[in-house]
Amino acid sequence: MDENTEHNPIKGRGASDNPPNRFEGMYTDYELDEETGQKPSRTTRFYPDDTRDIIATNDSPDIPFDKSVNPYRGCEHGCIYCYARPTHEYLGFSAGLDFESRIMVKHDAPEKLRKRFNSGWEPTVLTMSGVTDPYQPAEREYEITRGCLRVMAEFLNPVSVITKNHLVTRDIDYLQELARHDAALVTLSITTLDDELVRKMEPRTSRPERRLKAIEELSAAGIPVGVNVAPIIPGLTDHECAAILEAASEAGATQAGYTILRLPFGVKELFCDWLEQHFPERKEKVLNKIRDMRGGKLNEPQFGKRFHGEGSFASQISDLFKVQTRRFGLNRRDISLSTEHFRPGKGSQLGLFNQKNS
Image (cartoon, rainbow, N blue to C red; front, top):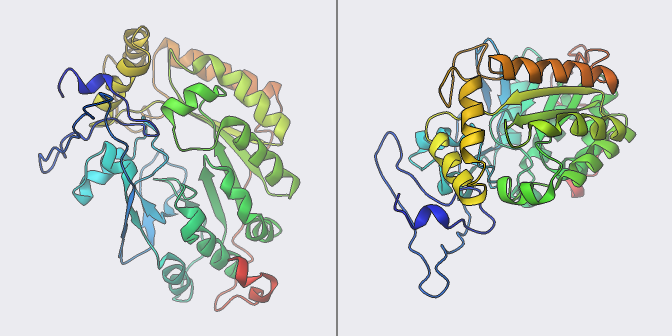
């Protein structure tokens, strides 16, 4: 990357560069506008994703679910730190701007999910989405996540939803039906309560107050809801942990979790460049704290260490989290989603839902 481009963020984007795909070595950058000296905004493009099986599986020992549904690959939210960015390289794209502007869309996900449920499916909790946000901006138009939730509500297959977007409240009808059968949990991820930091770091997500409002609306509807303080960025957002937990608890959250920033593969360079663009005076402090929690490196992929880090600073965060969750009444009981109400064959309550709103 040349010296000029690393200091020119693109408005509305997390990344400002398109680094080489680690598998193909391809690099596509964007020339600066001659008049403004800035990089031009990039239009998002959507491509059909014909993935054969809509349900993804994993056997990672430190991930609390083994099956998930991902309606989209790539994410227009543009969170600069997103650990999923390198997955876009498997598709021939870059982990940088491509990840947030070249989105793969699984248009037939609801139909494929219905087919799986009708084919000897053994009911189990499905997580939406586990990789990229199921309520990213495109969902407002495509309604693929909503379609999948409709199918889950018909069959009463339990679902755990993770998002940063207030749009999840649009689907309270289906989530509420599932919650009546102990088959729904929604988690809102909140990294910071600072609107300005969100604008720079997570440019197309819902603002913090909207995420808290989503917690409030979901809780009022009887849907179990939690908060992920994630990721905690040492030296930048770690001081907000207690405030986020307090605000989420007051809004109605009953569960809470956290993760420490992960910087796999090319995310390291993207995040370092972002710090240089927006917080140059704090860059080395943040990176040194990350190294302190990652055995001297910027990333530690080892199971059992990658989510919460290690060392004295990681222990301090862990202890603080435990104290504050007790203080605000979070995690007093586990939420166990039930599969006992699963209905094989076509769901019998389809008529409960207004199809024109689906």
